[in-house]
Length: 268
Ligand SMILES: C[S@@+](CC[C@H](N)C(=O)[O-])C[C@H]1O[C@@H](n2cnc3c(N)ncnc32)[C@H](O)[C@@H]1O
Image 1 (spheres, helix red, strand yellow):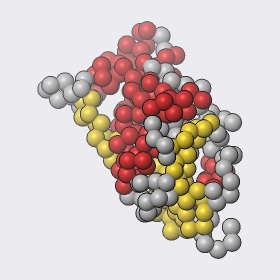
Image 2: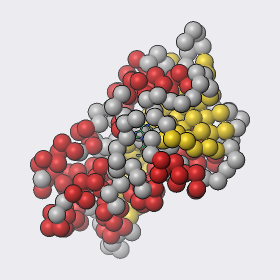
Image 3: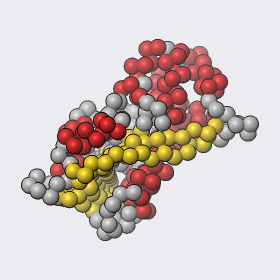
Image 4: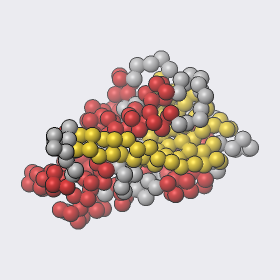
């Protein structure tokens, strides 16, 4: 199973991205055309943001959340207390579920981290019933996920070598045309892409910066590897560049690109 060693602390993930992935998940689920009472699979469930949104919004019969990180699976199990939800470790590229085992398969903020993206989407298709929904979203790292985009812009200004780590550069799949092609190439039909944009308001620079010190996720892992002076310089450059209101708050926004399609009714 391929997973990044950065996905190991659920509380730190919640402070960094989890607090923004939750509103994105709710908006994403609200637009999915799946009736109540269905069985769902959440691929790369992490700490359970998307599973929680399904339980709140989609009235599912059951949700199975799978993630490669045992620590995140433990975190989700401890925090999402609902008889309809279950969490297990599992690889997105070899899903431990039966063919046509669920009615809908979703995945939030995961696809770009996988080494075999076509294989992962094929697995999502295999797991869903004929006519079932296969849907996902990823951050717009190259622009609209402003927190991470601005972080890497500042990091690259101070250290051009950081460009190789910039998620906006590393993850070309995070664009609507690429997602659409991936879904279509997997034989999914009625393919559609869209966006979800949520405000990400920080109380001040400390509120924005502290999660980068947690080491969970690619940008925090980069910060963790810096020396004290380089880390302080990056914080100061960010301070200079961020839009800051008179009360010190920093209003940014986060965009996720969404994609969905259906398993054809004809022979699989
Ligand atoms: C950015 S987090 C997203 C978590 C959650 N879906 C959310 O929206 O908050 C990416 C997740 O992908 C998981 N992951 C990475 N590679 C994986 C793989 N091969 N199979 C399953 N999960 C994987 C990580 O463990 C992590 O939980």
